[in-house]
Length: 196
Image 1: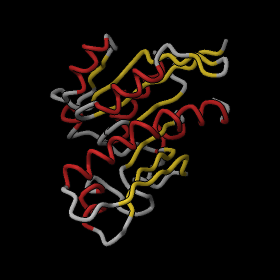
Image 2: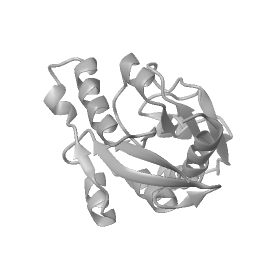
Image 3: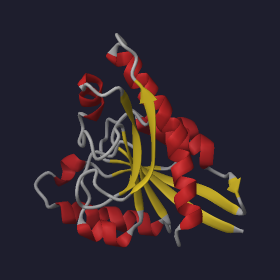
Image 4: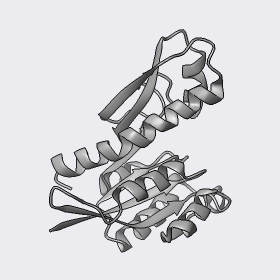
């Protein structure tokens, strides 16, 4: 049986991290077992670290603050070193608030989830920009990570229909609910169709 090792990178709340772990870790899909031996946070105060403790998931911390006077390449060199020590096959970004270098993208296959219908509303304000737009739909995209922000090849997209008068909080909750549904599906699609 093939075993695929995934690492989840995060910077914040960790709700996608927890969802992925519960849906994929130690589960078998079409003769392929998913193992998630590692999560990594770019922030020491990220709530996702507590989620890792609760899940009994090993969590490394590689703080962006420790590298604020250094280059992206220096941070990524250490990140690559950590991930390689766990024999990671696929890197999954779940709210990881860093742009990754060419070297990282050439070393690992990585996926990211973004709360908009890309190529619309790139960047960290996607949910509010989507909410405030005149569009009648909103959605979620999963894409391969590239050196350019939110611009890698798309793997999966899905939509929700906007509700007139809906609060931002309700809209955001529906976007996150869609993320929890689409991300495990996209990961399995990539693992089964790509030579990873």
